[in-house]
Image 1 (cartoon, rainbow, N blue to C red):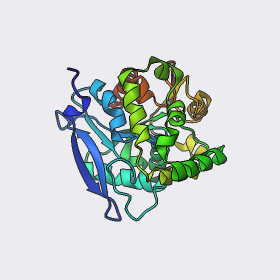
Image 2: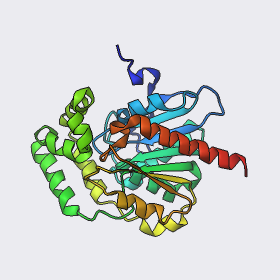
Image 3: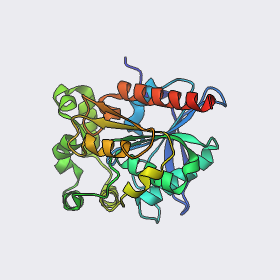
Length: 282
C-alpha cells in the first residue's frame, strides 16, 4: 500500500485579525535551526495540493501549508479575500510560527499573495519561489468575470472538464491515472465560496513597478504546457528581479506542484540550499 504523504503532517489553525479560524498543515522540523518553508496554494486548491511536494522535501525542514481565507478548511471571516488580505493573513501565520524569516513558495494565486507579502512585510521572507503567475494586473478580466458568473450560477461540478483543462497540462491529462481522477473529483466538489476568490484574483493590482526594488532571492517556475499563464510572464519577472532564476518544467501545465511534484521539490530544495549557502559565506 502506498504511504499517504500527509501522514507526517499535523493540522492546526490560527486566528485572523477578524477572528476567523485559518487552517494550516505543518510538518515539524527535526531541529530548532532547520529551515522553515511556507507553501501558498493556487486558486481552486488548498494546502493538500503540496502533499507530494512535502514528501520529497528534506526531512529536517519545517514545512507549513495554509488554506487561504475562504478556501479549504479556513473560515471566510468578515474580510474580503483580496490578495492584500491574504498576505496579511500569511504574515500573521509567519509571526505566529516564530521562525521568521521564512522561505515562501507561491503557486499561481499563491504567487500573487507572495508578491503582496514582499510589498507589505519583506523582512519576513528569506527567499521566494513563484510558480505560474504574472506581475501584471489581469489582462483578460472578462474571462475571469465569466468564470465567476458560471461558478455562481452552475457550480464547479458542471465546469469540471474546463477547470481540468485550465489547471493541468496535456501530459498530465493524457497520462490519466489515480492522480488525475483525484484532482478531477476535487475540482468537481470545490467549496461554493470559491467565486469570491476568483473575483479577487482578477481584481488584483499590478506588481510590475515593484519588481526592480525586490531584494528577496527569487526563483521563478513555469510550466511549458501552461494554458492559463505563459512562461514569458515569469521571464518578465526574472528579467527585472536582480539575481533571480527562471526554470521551465517541460511536462507541466499550470500546476507543477501536482503535475511534477518530485522535480518541483528538487528545484525548490536546490534553490533554498543555495540561498542559505550564499548567506553563510557572506
